[in-house]
Every structure is written in structure tokens, then in C-alpha cells.
Image (cartoon, rainbow, N blue to C red):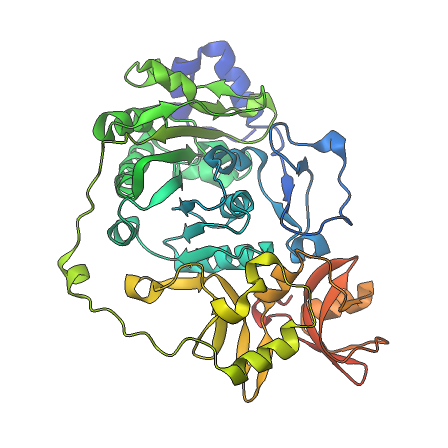
Length: 461
């Protein structure tokens, strides 16, 4: 059993009582749970899942491990995610057409789930302050086939200046002391101390202070952590109700493997009972806490605009509309495929910037002066009188049944992931989609029965 800090054991023995605390400590010695979600945006008829392994309360989620080289993962048909970590995004309950912010989004599990809820309509802003982790976030949203996301890497305070009173829903899966990850990552135990818990609480308040400024009146905030500590959970929710007049909402939970919040661990607000905590003793998954709050229709939290922000000039729009000749080059490729609704009107909606052709999720994004990693769908790149389709386009095309698809053998599949050129008996020429076990992996270009590999270099193994 991992050696738990004595301060940790004393704290939870005091909070839970000796018997329940010992059960809790013993559960940290159990094996962590692994699971995956099935992508409802894509054609997944070839994916077979055991109904007996369903994760209670989460649609299309199953216990089990998926390898990073499994074609289901490579194609974006599934996303590996810890079971209880699936619930915060479920609690967002976004509707098509709404504007949603995932403020601490990497590696992307919650953003991919929200994108399914939006069904390509509205806007998902997915933010990750760490640029390295934001790149992983982009890869995962691209693989998932998301078409309406703006992926940024900024401090919450900067976003609050750009998006005041803007979002219908905000998810803050906050950085925390990580107590809920002790059995999945025993190294996290080494960093635990009560001082660290309080340091996390301070940072959580800073993040939430910015988040609330971005909520519309009557907008909803989902707050979650992967820790058990009242200081980072009930006490944070209590602080939100007192400082911003937010109202705690009931959560739509379709599983019995939860415990409700403890008002006595904060300010005795009876509505704290509406918050939920997942304990490992329930055997659903790892530790997690979640709460949902609503901003009053009469409350407007002002964001301070920095002097530098005020001085920034509007960027003059470059030539972004496609020319007739560019449209013709792109059509020579796209017209051979069945286009999902999100990109069907590409002729009208596409923009070109530095030869990259994309359909923006948010127009005029340049004037936000943000570090933007991706905006909408990148269709591909214009190069010397030709158009090369991009990997994100392949992932979006996988949402519909396609005819120009070359199925690979196991040997050719591994070569494709390595970036190698392949031989084929297919009679097609030009760009095709490449698949293995009917999972679409990306593009290839056929000439004389040779497939030139268009799998992105950054994803090759």
C-alpha cells in the first residue's frame, strides 16, 4: 500500500470517522480504473463494445484500455479517460448553438465530450495555459473531428478581458492537490501537504475570479477537481456563492456511485448537498468532485481592461476570401468526398491565411490578440497551383460514410503510422482516405499504385 502522509490520514479520519477513513485508505491500494468513450460524431459501426463493461451514468463509455496505436484511438473513434473524469463535461449539458468555455482544457477529454454535445453548432473555446499541453489538446480535438472549436493558450485573466459576459456555459476543471489520483499516480503523494492544498485553493480562486467575469447573466459554471479536500471543493463553492451571488444547482447524475457534498465542511450552506464527490470506495473510478452554479440574471461581474489591451489597434484584415481559381483547386479534391454539414458550404465560409485554408469557428479572431493554436477546421494548404488536404479534414470526413477509402493490412497500417510510402492494388488516383479495420486514419495520394503518405509528421510513431 502506498505510504500516506500522517497529516493526510489524520485529516480524513477526523472528517470521515475511523471506520470510513480506513476503508478509504484501503481503497487507495486498489488498482486504478481505466475506461474509454466512444465518439458519437463519427461512423463507429465497426466498433464493438461489451455492454457489461458500461460505465454507470455515462453514455457510450466502457471500462477497458485502448492502446495509443489501436486504430480506434488513431482514428478518433474513442478517447481514453478515467471514468469519473467523464462526469464534469456531462454536467455542462451544452446545447447546440451555445457558446462554451473549457478554461483548463488539456489534454482534451472534457472538450471532446462538450463538442459532442454541441454537435458542430455554436462555439467551444478550449484553453490551456501551458503551450506544450495546448498542443496535445489541439491534437485530441483534431482527432475527434471537432469543427467549431477555438483553441487558445492564455491566462484566464487575459481571456476575461477578451470575452466579458460572453459564455452560456463554462467548465473549470481546476488544477488541484490531486488527492483523487493517488492510486493512479502514487508519485502525487510525495507532493501532498496541507500547505499545498491551501496554495491550490488560492490559485483556484484566481482562476474562478476570471471565469465568472466571462459568464453571461444566468450563465452556468461547472467547477470540478480530482481531489477530496473540502478546502478545494465545498469551501470554494461556498466562496463562489458569497462573492458572486452564484446559486448552487442540482446535478443530473444517473449513477448511485456518488456521495453528496458536506455543508458542515464549509459554511453550512444546505445547498452544498447538491455538489457531488466520487470516492474510490464506490469502485466507479478515481476521486473527483463537481458542482454546478448559476449566475443571477441581475449580476454582472466586470472584467478590468488593462492599459495595454486598450491601446492595441485593430488588425487590418488580410485578403482572406478564396479566389475563383483557389476554389477550383480545392474543389478538385473535396468534390470527390461526401462532406458533413459543418463543411458543406466551404466555398462561402472558408478563409485563406498564409496559404492555409480554414473554416473559422470564430470570425475576426485576430483582433482578440490571443495565442491561437487553431480556429475551426483547417481544410488544407494551397501550394503552387495545387491543394493538399489537411489531417483535420480527414478526421472530419470520417463522420460520414466515404467511398474513396483504401483499406490497409496490419503490416501496411504500421508502415502508415511510421510515415512510409505504401503499395496498393487500388485503381484510384489522387487523394484517398486510408483506413485499417474500417477506421479512417488520414489521407494518402495514389499514383501508379503507390500511396504517398500524408499522415502528419508530428503524429508518426
